[in-house]
Length: 430
Ligand SMILES: NC(=O)c1ccc[n+]([C@@H]2O[C@H](COP(=O)([O-])OP(=O)(O)OC[C@H]3O[C@@H](n4cnc5c(N)ncnc54)[C@H](O)[C@@H]3O)[C@@H](O)[C@H]2O)c1
Image (cartoon, rainbow, N blue to C red; front, side, top):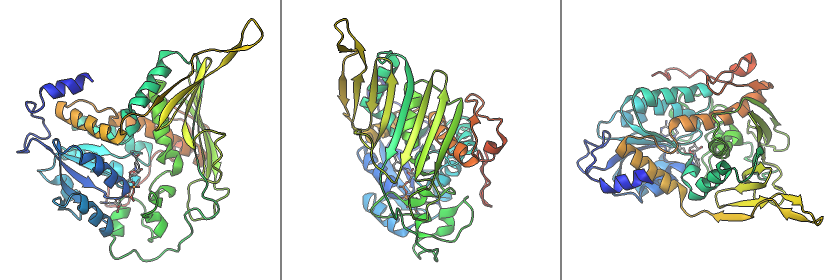
């Protein structure tokens, strides 16, 4: 709030490093990836026309390029995002491509002096995330991660309740997403030639060369794209949604990361060509508490609770939070008369702000005063790493002991999943 009032007082007086060259004083934004999330970010950006001007777009799939241009008809089009990143008259970039591109594009944008809004999860491997943090620091860039829940007022209240101690000693935190796509899930389309209006090689980028498959590309007008369910590009629900939930856990519990991770899961029910599990349970050990992430894609029963959320289980009560509200359910104790009484007051708070809009406002404010945004890249990296480690444990079939300070494990099998090779000519270097 303090930063916001400072901003209001000196709105036009503050010439920023990033936008100094813009005659209008606005931040000139280039968009990389005009898919579903790219366009939903643009809906927030277009509410900030006093501060941001969308000047460029790069997209390798013509139908998504056209949909994006309908929103920002004056934007210049760059078929190759590298030219957008190099352009002198762009101050900041939005990276809303599939996950396997995030690290390369972020590092290159930082090198070119751009500020960055990069979607979650920030990376496909832990090593990529480490490189992104280093690039942001080395080139002194503002890098906001699209874990926008932290900009939600009711999420901030939930975090404050957890940190106030009102829930007592919190020994267990549970996070989950449940749905049911049984039996065919995303189906099993055959490999084919890529469509003529897609640059498949530029979509694959640093990922291994692979024949086109409709599901690997995954763009679908009726759902979020299916690239999420293939290891070369993403990490399944563990990272796609897990990162949003685990991000709030690390924030509220004021922890840098787990000390060990054990995950079980597999593809037990769905009959489709996805690679990521339809059932997973990751357990994270912290000093003083255990945290779990559970995902089921073949059974949606959430035991009377919504299909996703976070529960902080304390000795005095349980706090549940999702994107709509938070709610405290008190624990009970026996009173002298032999009855039961609540250990704390029940309470509830509703969501009161569109979080992505405010996440962009936060990004703008950070660019203007060159401060760290609310989901600075290091925060986004830690939350992404926690989610990625869930997959590392499952895929290596190991309990992974983890040092969150050095971000290392002595477990040799697990180490092989912390980093992957880029397909030439792509190189991740500072
Ligand atoms: N913060 C949130 O709540 C939230 C919600 C949904 C998605 N996301 C994230 O946003 C990202 C995009 O997800 P989506 O569902 O919009 O995917 P999508 O496939 O619909 O969109 C990605 C777009 O990037 C384009 N693209 C791929 N490679 C490119 C390149 N080299 N240059 C230019 N464009 C390229 C694709 O053609 C596609 O149009 C993912 O990382 C996802 O996790 C975040």
